Image (cartoon, rainbow, N blue to C red):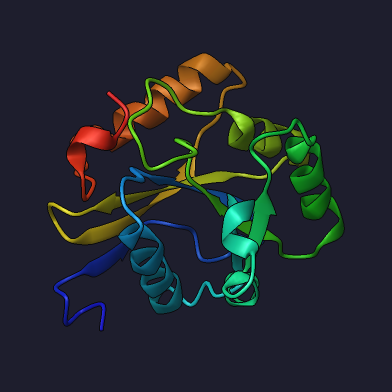
Amino acid sequence: MFRIMGWSVRSDMPPDLDKYIIVVAPHTSNLDFFIGLFARSIMRMNDVRYLAKKELFRWPLGSFFRALGGYPVDRSKKTNLVDQVAELFRTMPGFKIAITPEGTRTHVDRWRTGFYRIAQQADVPIVLAAMDYGRKEVAFSDVFPMTGDQDADIARMMAHFRGVRGRHPDKGVT
């Protein structure tokens, strides 16, 4: 189905990664979820989990999203989510998760930084996944070299995604 729609997957990821965070951007459409599922399946990464707003996990679709690896997030409360996800990395062998740093499909001026703090706390690498509707390609990077300077690293990550066109380009990070 993915290829029939004209999409492809490209990957520079090392094949031997055990635990990691995939930072997926830009996130501008509900369709991103399905494109991501197709790419995850093609890459044989079906054990990669994802975070999504808790409202998606209500009946009748809650069990569907959980079965696909979803973890509900209550964005209205401070829930120590960074600590919780870092603990999953420490306690679950081979844990992997995909996170959209915008945290929403609407326009934002900056990324949320929880994914970065999780990577630091859990001591796991970050891989960048560009969902490019212009090229109809999902491209996975090699491990992103983190320096410990959160602002500089996130600026470099955002630069990596410059030129990547979301489904709704006006909604991404400027």
